[in-house]
Image (cartoon, rainbow, N blue to C red; front, side):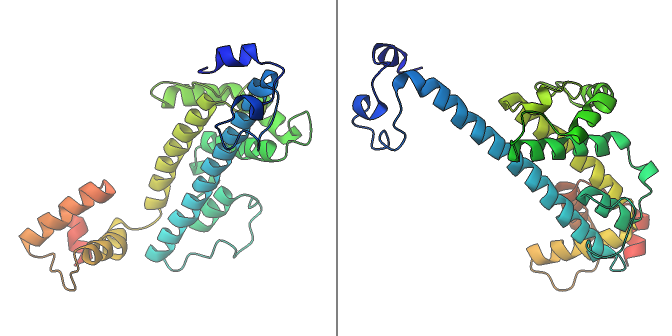
Length: 254
């Protein structure tokens, strides 16, 4: 926008001839008339990369949250152990190995993750002019329900994603990225609760939070029977983990 008049007056000239003082003008040497199109292509490539990074970060979260669950319950299998009928994507591996009945896991989250995963695959492998059959089936069968679900879950509703639109499944915009971030954050909050409910609260307090508390404060021995110590630990639980242990939880810990 800053160079709108310059570009209009030099449509046929090359960037290296107009932006002489810019050391990079020769590396991306195109006619100024094509600059807007080139900028659009570069912007799309960046958005595709960010979308892929967002989903990869979410998969890292799934791996880490399962590792945390195994710290609490060492009887849980490794993610690459065991055989389950529905075990083809990471979220299903986590659910299966936690022993969570798929019927107890809100299907809307699973369908959403499937949509985002297939869209990620589409953006990476853009060899065809059409979206995959799996993504198209998800859109046609579940799109309208997912729009209703997330419009009810997100404070500002969906801004860029339309789960029911095939063309939207082939697009990437800034608002789609924002929706994806908000959706995956909400999904992570839901999974946190699922994982937390898969073991005893006192075990989580003892094997995770108390260990972290003692490490941060460089404490070897900590007597939770002491009222002052208990209040300090309670504050740590609230601030760092968002949970508030009860007296019964403390009794089970000690």
